[in-house]
Image (cartoon, rainbow, N blue to C red; front, top):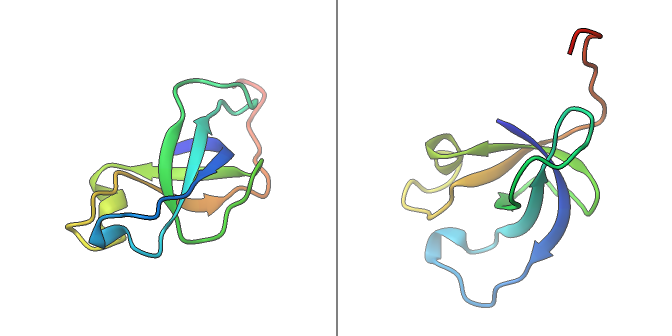
Length: 90
């Protein structure tokens, strides 16, 4: 799983059948401290994450299993982070 921050949304008038009714978000992968660590990811969202929120992303086949197995989805928002705590040694 990946920690990320919602930096935008994508609207599509035409989608594959397995993606109908899905909200698509642009997620920036971040470190525990909030710094950027990679290229943005487009992820499906069914839980209602919004701009600026920290989220947990699942990628690959685990993401696809949340939907129709034929859906062309490789990333999905699985949680909205309320808070996190990291020990001093990290």
